[in-house]
Structures are given as structure tokens and as C-alpha cells.
Amino acid sequence: MSFINLFLIGILIGTAMIVPGVSGGVIAVVFGVYNKMIYALTNLFKDFKKSFSFLFVLAIGILIGAVWFSNVMMFLYEAHEAITKLAFMGLILGGVPFLFKEVKISGEKGESGKINYIALALTFIFCLILLFLSKNVFKIDLDAKTNSFFAANFNLFLAGVIYSVGKVVPGVSGSFLLITIGMYEYVLSVMAHPITFGLRQINKLIPFIIGLVFGVSFLLKIMNRLLKEKFSLIYSIIIGFVLGSVPALIPNDFSVNELIFGVIILIICCVLSYKLTK
Image (cartoon, rainbow, N blue to C red; front, top):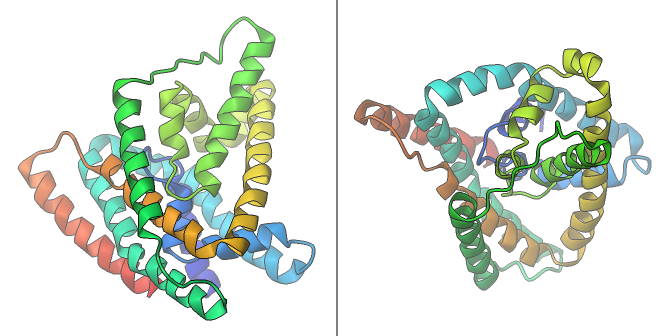
């Protein structure tokens, strides 16, 4: 994979990080950089030159996607929500064949090389249940501006941990989880203006970053071990999460023109994603 492609994928991952219902981990998986990212992060000092160059290019793309491009994407998301959601749906669906291919290739490395359809189906159903509950049952409200110093910092730390989930676990949208606990607008303001926000509210940024680093470090170790020992099973679960994230992107409010244009964009993005991951 060329550095240019890796950089562009990083931008997509960074952009997906701030769009509710979309997982940055899913984009990493469907474009074939998830396993490489896990390996590079967990073996940084063992293969420093290769791992560092890979992570550096990817990180620059993610940073640009999350900081600069997030402003553009949030405008599109707010002004043309249906079309934006369908575009991401196309990107995700176009990469699904690559995931099945990855499991098949694993059969050449001693794994079963077969999709565990029971695990896939159960994961997909689990995602649908979570989607239903998040809209109809769970509505937690954590106020980061509470007068309690401990509670405020704990909420910010928790937001960082939750946000890390969408960065590491494919199919889980960190932004979507943040919305359910009332912290999405805060994190979006951090991602869109990290320097100015940090200068003005460094006391709030520090516990959030600590939570983010803690969550990523903890989850990376778990995912790295599971991918080594149970690749086919874990990828079957990941595929279930990926497919399970699609219903969250189904637009609720749209015009006929938006639907027609959105479907065209979906098909284009699906073909583009398929070609890039083929």
C-alpha cells in the first residue's frame, strides 16, 4: 500500500471518527489497515522504522480528517444528513467482501478459514438491540460542567475511554456512544479546535486525553491477542459489527431528490471502496 493511499485512508478514518453512527475502526478494517495498525502499535519498538513510518502517515491523515475535514463533514452532515449517511454506508458495504476474503486467506495460515455465521448473526442482532435501546431506553446525561471537581474530571476521563472504543473496536461508533451520555458536542469541539480549546481549557483536555490513551492501550492488547489466537472467529464478530453498524446509517428524514442522489452516491462510494480494497 502506497503512502498516498494510506494517507487518504487516514483522512477517511479521521472523518468517520466524528460522524455519529460511523466507526473509525470499521473504515480501518474495510480498507485493510486495521490489522497492520494493531501490529504497528503493539510492535513499535520491535520493528521501529517500518511501524513508525506506517503510523506516522496514517496518523497525519487521521489528524487532518478529524481536525480540518471534520468541519466540512459536520457541515455536510448537518445540511445533507441523508446523503452523507448513505455515502458512508456505501464505503462500508463496498469493503465487506474484503473482510470475507481476509478470513479465507487466514485458512492458509493454519486458521479454519471459515466464517462463523452463528457469531456473525449474534453480533448483528446484538447491534440491532443496542441501536433500539439507545434510541428508546438509555439516555444518560453526564454534565462535564458539574460543580464537583472529581465528578467533572471523571466524566471527561470516561468520555475519553468511550471515545477510544470507536478507534479500536470495529463496528462500534465512539461518537454514537458519546451522544448517549451527552458528551458528543464537547468532544467535537475538542477535535475541531484542539489547539485553541487546549489553550483555553487545558484542565478539561488532560483527563479526556488520559482516558483516551488508557482506553486505546487496554483495548489494543486485547484485540492483538484475540486476532492472533482466534482470527476467524474475531473477524466473523467484526463482520457482524460492521454489518450491524449499517442500520444506524439509514436516514430518518429525507426528500425524494435527496434519496435519489443519495443512492447514486452510495453506489459510487460502494464501487470505490470495493476497488480500493480489492
